[in-house]
Amino acid sequence: MSVSLQESETLKNLMRSFAGESQARNRYTFAASLCKQQKLHVLEAVFQFTAGQEKEHAEIFYNHMKDLGGTTVEIDASYPLDQTSNVVQLLRYAQHNEYEEFDPVYRTFGEIAAKEGFSAVASSFRQISKIEQTHGNRFGHLADLLESGALFVSDTVCGWMCLNCGHIQEGLEAPKVCPVCNHDQGFFIRLEMAPWGGASVLC
Image (tube, rainbow, N blue to C red; front, side, top):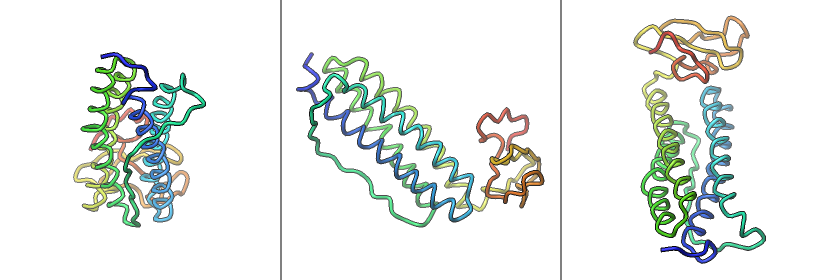
């Protein structure tokens, strides 16, 4: 079945997704601010990192609609209201929302786009859905660590990286204060989870 984009369900799904990704970016920016207030700087960085990726997803969906520039797309949709000062709960909310985008939302949107003849859009939905699954996994893992008191402590010796200066130190626990830049423990992340980690010692 081939239809014009303007008359398609895919157009509405693109706008729903653009709105959803835009809101996710803002929610994660708000969450990052809360983490900063609570001196959980590593979680602040993760939320900001993910917010940047959600912005890119929004732009991809937005660009699929560029041929209809200047028009208005009316949609009906619902979006989460993740209001809490509990960081573990924020991580759980984010995990749930990312998994929901992974399946069923983007899986279904991809199937509809393929049926309507929009193969490039279908591909974007499929590929971004896998990224959302990765986001959900990461948020869930961090929630587990924070909830169990293991965000800065490990059962085995491992590497810890200071996200402020890049100092790496091995041990059962992240340093209380970075010996290089004097930033507090909240800036440390397990080396295996660090961006560009090149981890030789994992935990």
